[in-house]
Length: 165
Image 1 (cartoon, rainbow, N blue to C red):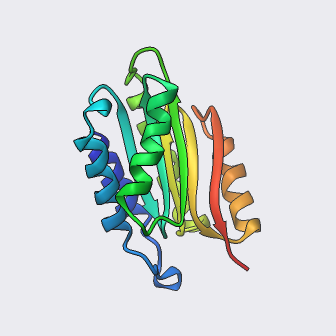
Image 2: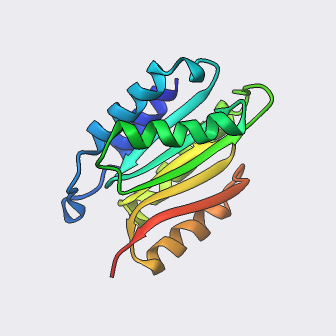
């Protein structure tokens, strides 16, 4: 299911040519994802990896602060092309995936408005928290964040934009 949402997000919100990437985000995502999968310590974790222009976000759930830190180290060693690592992993007592339907509902709302507002915005949604990535101007980033903050089901917005201009 996680792979489906990642694929959906990347395909719906792919960056235009004006934001050509100096790095291969697919390669970065694959390398970091594979490093997480190959590490047995994360077998009871739910880690989503997304890379946009070398900005790598880790979202999801882990069972300890040590695992959260280990995920950052694992990601950093997996690819030398990471420009910025954003670790938004949530430390929980037990994994909870009951929010998948509500996250999908938020994504559906975003899909309706974001392409017109900012096609360079990539939302990552986990448990009602919307993480915004991509290359935008400060004004456009604020407009997108304000629009999403008024959507049903959104608990919080975390901005990890790379600002241009």
